[in-house]
Amino acid sequence: MGGDESMPVDSSSPVTSLVRRGRRSRRTRASASFEDRLWHVATRVAVSLPLLGLAFVVVILAVKAWPAIKVNGPGYLTSSSWQVGNFYGSIQHTHGVAHPQGAIYGAWPLIAGTLESSLIAILIAVPVSIGTAFALTERLPTWLAQPLGFFVEILAGIPSVVIGLWGVLELGPFLAQHVYPVVASHVPNVPVLRYLRGPVGYGEGLLTSGLVLSFMIIPIISATTRDLFRQVPVLPKEGAEALGFTEAEVARRITIPWVRSGIIGATMLGLGRAIGETIAIAMVSGSVLGSVAPNLYGTMTTIAATIVSQLDSSLTDATGFALSNLAEAGLLLALISIVVNLAARAIVRRSGRLMAPVGRG
Amino acid sequence: MDETRSSTTPGSLDPVLARLDPDRGRPAQVLETVGLNLAFGSKTVISGVNIGFQRGTITALIGPTGSGKSTFLRTLNRMNDKVYSFRHEGEVLLDAESIWSPRQDLLSLRRRVGMLFQRPNPFPMSIRDNVVAGVKAHGIARGKQLDVVAETRLREVGLWDAVKDRLHDSPYRLSGGQQQLLCLARALAVGPEVLLLDEPTSALDPLSTEAVEAMLRQMTPALTLIVVTHNLGQARRLSDQTMFFYDGRLVEHGPTAQLFDAPREATTQRYVHGLIG
Image (cartoon, rainbow over all chains, first blue to last red; front, side):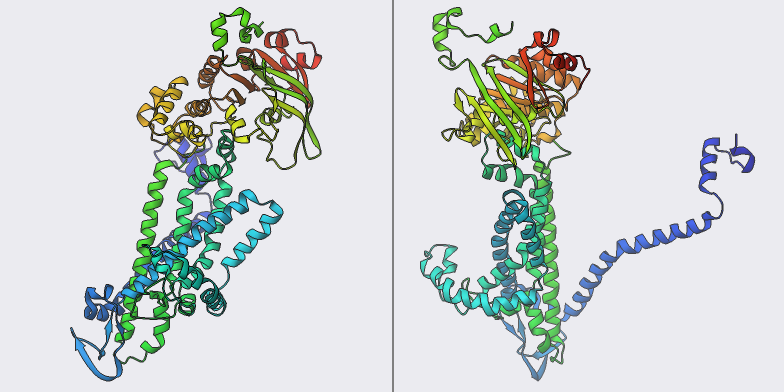
């Protein structure tokens, strides 16, 4: 029929030739092929950008950190001194790397501070966030839940420097005067809780940092969890109620398990933020390099906070060794973040495989 | 005709058996509504229903969509109580005691009056844990006993052979019919006296429907079943009594055969003949 008269037909069937002719119609062909090629190039660029970005950052950091890595060796991860040396004294060489006399770097307190403060933040933030999400989705009437949910989202957008300022000016001193002493004198001398005893300091330190961090990640986790809870279908929840479950049992056995992997993901998002949080911690940690906090009130610092607080003075090290050490710290931080991310994925996959609803019940 | 099936009049039985009857001394009507009016806000959904449910029988609730039969059903174990703006007047009596009486514990009411839903709703836990979820919550059994409960109930609904090798797997990989049977096993496991079924087979294929119906028939007279269904054939096959709801009112009720073959009301006649729906 029509296909044969206007177009030369190749050996294929009439149907394919019709289809081809339709696609190849007139002037659009050239521009379409250009658009097509542009599309292919653009998607390829877009898909490789994150990868390139990550590789670029890691490679640059590694190159910058290389002198420090050579001098410090693996002891960097376990030793506790952070001596920049005398920037204006004689210059020494170790393994061919120039550095100021007396420069000894060990990042253990920074690593410990980072992990401890983030852990405290997560331990506080996860239950609070799940409770908040529950209140917003299940307990409160809409006229109250909506504005409250809005405030939670606003809270997520407050710059960390503002929260840090509040932490160092208000929260820290208040806790050190009115709360920490009471806690410290009433907690029994048993493992774990022991770290809540001892001198309480002036409000700058590990626990205050953890609290400030938790304020920063609660909005993230609770907003995500609230959206997850909204997706839980009503039928399994009603089934549980009809079986005589209490409201708490419905939450614990149906709602939370239903979105467990999502909650883990949200937690890891918060953990990532806590591990990398810089300026607020630089303000409330007490910024003590070179020693691990002896108890929860002790002053400390984290990798991120150290990088920002040491950057200025490191630039005055003519050998560049101080800067190289900050690069090594940065590399370490990036690695910790990546490991946390991978761990999160593994956990999500495992818990997902166990009981995630496939399709809908 | 079918009323004889549930009659446990002591005279007709061996006196020894009669004494062993667990329902001895209880009212013949396990559930009864007295002047029941139900409303959401200002919209009345059910008005003036006075009806009793004979112990050990199957009652079908039929009627067009929006006739109030589902609302009526969900009221019987107080599932509507937490719905915003739900209001009720009149009484629902379970063994002659109001389900809203302060002495009535909501959780144990729901243990006694179980429910099976329109679509299968397994919980996000293993197949075995699904079956014993209610048993655990009510502290009826524990430890090793739970495995026995799980096996007994799964056998009861004919699912045991299909799932015995994957008791610890996710229930969401079962077929829809199997999932519904699992939910039935779960509802039976807490030992309810009444089971409310809200279109229990509307999401199932004909073969699964048949399996579920067969199961339900076996459960009387130990259990009282109240089934909301849009499937008139199912109502006819399954039930002893049928109640026809129309526009929020209980238009007619009676033995199933009579209601279908010789309805008293014109509306009922037109509905069962498919003229309104």
